[in-house]
Image (cartoon, helix red, strand yellow):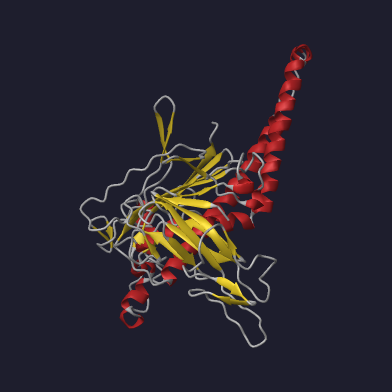
Length: 454
């Protein structure tokens, strides 16, 4: 009650909440809570002799006098084009935005076409943003007013200026070019916030940044924008116990090496004497090697998780019968370690102070010898630096036709029984793949990893 949320120039206040339920209400909630306004649906609801009348409500009454009501939320528009009007939201929820297909269409140029979603779930109403350009903000009122802890990904509205709590400052520039529609997507999740990793400094926070360059339409790039980081999160969550144990081993080895180094420097006179007698100390070499080995094992686990997520996401898109395709160039940051994984020819570059730039991604193009060898081993060919004379990248998400083997594309009856096949040729293998690691032809070239502090 009294809570507000703003979208664009409009501010909506919750003035009545009816959580519905059976006789006497549900979960101890009041049957109809109001804050000085009319009924939920605009009628003049009132109680007479134990019987509720509501011109617009959804109250049902059986012969035993029991009531079964739908949950109902009443909003009052405080500002904006709908100022003064009331809006009723039932169990089906409602969407707010400029587009006519929204439940509540608001003629406000500050709103996105689909801006805000109000939904009923688990006995409560929830408000969420729908990926709008300028966000949906909730005003803290009543018992929630006052100090509030801020976390990564949180957004704050002060007046008409929106602020976000970021780990990284970022900017995004897009250009559609001569195409009829924008086929590319990008995404930055400041903190994926995997609960399985906890809040320790070794693996937190987890940041995901990605650019998806679509071709043949936006269907595939839009799918990746919504799904790929979620699949990566699932893969990492399954490996969380191993990752945490390996990272702890690496950290302990570094701590031991530092302690050995400190002990070695504090006994310099003894060391000098030892050198004079022809002997020397280890200097923490074993601990350092142990740390490197632990981090190498950690990196392999992360690479496997990313590969698993990429392949699974590609399979899900192909299963949805999508026909478009997309590249992906991504960066995953776990604590102070960063991993770049890419499919296709979109590029990621790491820029450091002093003007130093490091290429993190590898282009997957048919002109590469190793990629051309893989394609030809699958029975394909390359013309004008394109797979089968059509596709300019050798790895991509989607592109369903190129994920088929030559035998499937041509039909079994049109493929000879191996008489003219070159040794090592497998006509069932796909011409274009979405793998980023673990392939026998590419090995770890598609991955770049390292410590951000180095």
